[in-house]
Image (cartoon, rainbow, N blue to C red; front, side, top):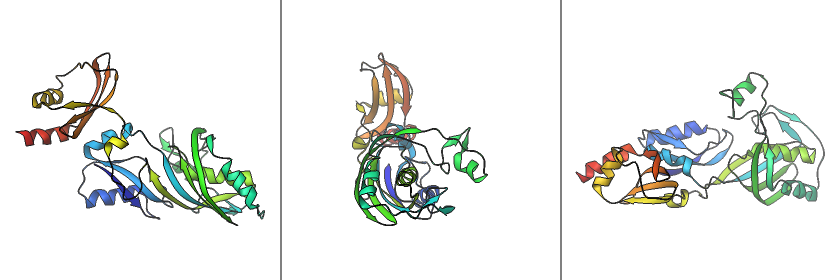
Amino acid sequence: MFKLIYKDLGISSNKAINIFKKQNNINKIGHTGTLDVLAQGLLLLATDDDTKLIPYISNKEKEYKVIAKLGFISKTYDSEGPISFCSKKIPSEKEVFQVVNSFIGKIKQKPPIYSSKKINGKKAYELARKNEEVKLKEISIEIFDIFDIKYKYPFIEFKTHVSNGTYIRTLVDDIGQKLTTGAYVSFLERTMISGLRLNDQINIDNLIKLKKIFINDKKELIDFFNGKIKKLNKEDDTYLLEFNGDCIGVIEINKGIIIKNNLFGNKIKKILERIF
């Protein structure tokens, strides 16, 4: 099962996920990306065997509503701080719009040192909180669009549609640097993830764009489950396996040979129990 949940402001993503897990008696749960404690909005979860489908999600784009506060800088790039004064400059509306829109496109971005990026197996924010040196490499991301821009000093409000891996906190800090005013995130809400918005029905076929192999024969299902099928007369590609409408695994074929076989064992067992 894939499920969208809304994480409230002030709690960690892990806490929100664990609450959902406990309330719904779920054994195994995974996610497609977290939110900061001081951010709110959508988390996309997968449960049980469907956690194995997360790497195959084709659309990992996101949309956010953002409010940036000018005149100050923050070590965390948000209101967690510490926050310090930067500038009394009050930029014009024209300058703000020009600078904000200048970030649209493919750009390089350095993740915040207060982030969960790993350095030698340790999270960057853990090192930063110990005042240890944190060096993070720039990453390539894309800002597809920035729209609904509103400006009333000291706040800039906008919405943005971005690629996977984009740090909105870094975007806001970069905007502040370019304006020479400083800026930090005072509000952040994720409003779309993987093309999905709150209350949308989740269709796996829209989420995961893989070719399918349909299994309708009980014997073939058992043979797959027992690892007896090693070859298939199919083009080289990655495929979803489906039995009577149920996704039961992912396989990868190279030169007619199954080189990767990621079956959903628990789901197949339940199907076989129903059949027999």
